[in-house]
Length: 637
Image 1 (cartoon, helix red, strand yellow):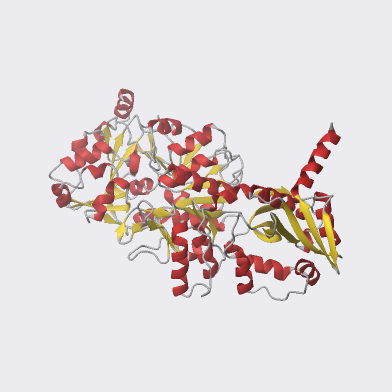
Image 2: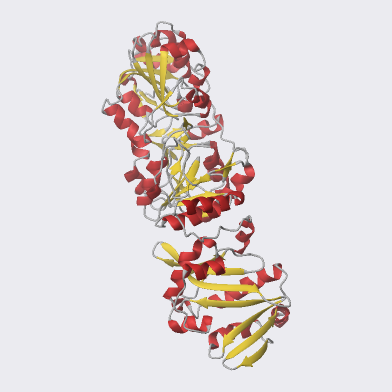
């Protein structure tokens, strides 16, 4: 500190160096005071301001308050100060419930504009900075977000200069000429942890999110416990990039293990772009003077247009509840303000404009110890719609993934009911029927926990160079399933159903697939690329028959035939059927359907066949496939 004090003295800045008490004594009655955000807030200045009884009738604006939570239960504090928070921190939640502080709903990207336009005028800014360099520039360190704009637009700036504040890189500097009073006081920065209570729920949600995030994606991770817990499940990804509002300790393992490299970023490559840092001393030392981290204000980092310049931008945020039409509440529990709009909408819209980008809203399926569903028929009374139906892409719970973008209300209901907690699915479907969202005869999704279906997911590179994903058919696939069959030629349909089937109505399809028993019966679909999405290009199914056998059938889109898809599906179905106690397949095939016969004969060379007019009935014990595999291994020796 002495070196910097000497520098300030030599540069004739000693007149600005004062004690905390003297600095805050310049705050006039009725002032509008801005305080730096979160872990970067100037604790010494806050304590000094509260301790000065002459400071009265002051309005405090802050993005995320931590230190003030020590005072909000003090009646004398509440008589002298009114706190207006842009985001309700966990430590301030109780005070918000009790009406002791005021919540200002605003998109993070637009808060700086409120300061600049004087819509929210600021008389005094209390900030914390690193010591000045030899040119007189101090870094805002871990709190750039709206702090930079707050200081720039305040009539008076009081800065706590702290050697323990990291000197971060980016557009995050303030010159001592722009500081009115400087307090030289070192103290540890506020530490913030984000541990999720239910690690099993987080593990399952993280597993589903990891299926959506591809190598080379650029990520935004929202504020909160769950988004940070999800990060640990992305450690096996490669060349991830980061463009996000807040950096936490959860990022460090991925940086250390090489999952985050930023090499594939097309915009500001090789840089982790952020505006805020909240965590432990280890994290603060990691960002100190580290050119890997590039800090900018929220008007830049959270600008949807800037976000969209990142290709493959994946936004991961959380919510309190989601209704069956896709509306998201993230800032209030009913009428009670719980957190804030924050960065969710900025990044959802930015990711939607990103080339290859998309958004994920993740949440546990239940609350209050499993007593309440977070997937709801309608948002709670008084709940705020932070994110509209039109902004939502993927919703993830511990029970799966719902894709909502471009989906009708009927499809959204089925997707979301499918990932709700099993005990609430039937009730959600009944409520949706009352609201005329779905068919009156719609069957609810199975009440089973379908996590075991994850082992049946796979992908395969075809000879034509396309990658096809394979997974079990779900009730929410009904419309895509019908579209697939309507896309087939009459000949293909005839070979599958033995007559020229013309109609695949809701009633017909629902009877077959809406309430699948995934042990007795199974359908595997192949999903091929179409534009930026995937469509069903093949379906293979088995259903319980007699004497321990299951009847099998499959159909492949004409454009994907002769690519080995049917042979692959039959292998997958056999493996699943074996696990469920079946000893073989039976099938009925039209005599002229040579390609299907070849698929079966290749897999089961000693199958038994019985001719009945133009149809052939096949019996294919699984033991034959084992014998073929053993013979193949012997031939290799």
